Length: 278
Ligand code: C2E
Ligand code: CA
Ligand code: CA
Ligand code: CA
Image (cartoon, rainbow, N blue to C red; front, side, top):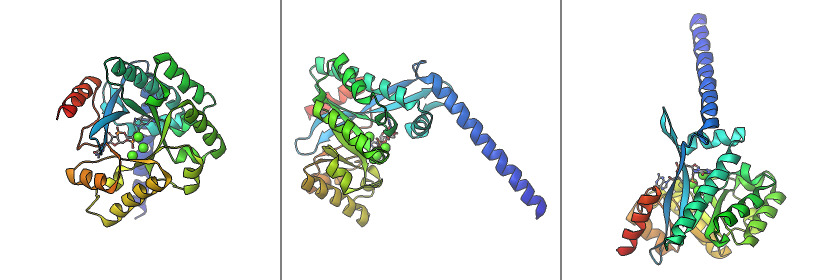
């Protein structure tokens, strides 16, 4: 027993050791990814459920690793938040998304673009100026940008977050609370934050109409939106039944595989054209 315990311990240490090495390698690869042009953005259409028009797109980052292939953002965004590289990566995302929005506008497609803003980015002193400068550089009206922030962004320094989001809001940028309901939701935040949209996390949409609890949570968020005069976006809509339910329940906006996966710019343009033809 003593022998096998010893072996288990060695095995355990070896696996932690491997994890640390892999993590270090990931950070190293991440540090050159931006300058080696390994990132690109994909765009997922956001649909108004009443008019059935595409009103905008959420920009989502993709990392094409030279050896490992496509690495999902959930595998590297948290790492880049921990080592601070998200500040530079996030600025690149914003710049790229605004450049795309400007192109689409000049092609007669003035869509709103939603960009995920990490809590780490929001903590930067220069963040408000950086965002406004980027809009100006690309000649994008502030009303065409939406920033998606999670509830954790509000927690670290509430006063500072309120102040920055208010400045962004005053400039005309809209703010959405992302992953709503998964974090430490507090009605106090909602009351104090200058937000216009709530995004129901896809974990509550997946089993909508199958799991009663999820259905109730989605209903509650939609009702909360109504009473606070915030529009509600459902993410992760995958079926016609989900769309139908959300639309008749009064959820205004939706995105999800039922309409489209996140797409590269060219495919996105074709999708918009064919969607509005039907
Ligand atoms: P999120 O912001 O909550 O984005 C929604 C995620 O759901 C995206 O995953 C999207 O591709 C996926 N999705 C969309 N429709 C469906 C559907 O119908 N079914 C299912 N199962 N999934 C759907 P993705 O692109 O892998 O991104 C994961 C997370 O990584 C995002 O979650 C966001 O938190 C983060 N992320 C992605 N891009 C960026 C970025 O540019 N900056 C920052 N800070 N975070 C990002
Ligand atoms: Ca998001
Ligand atoms: Ca989410
Ligand atoms: Ca998220």
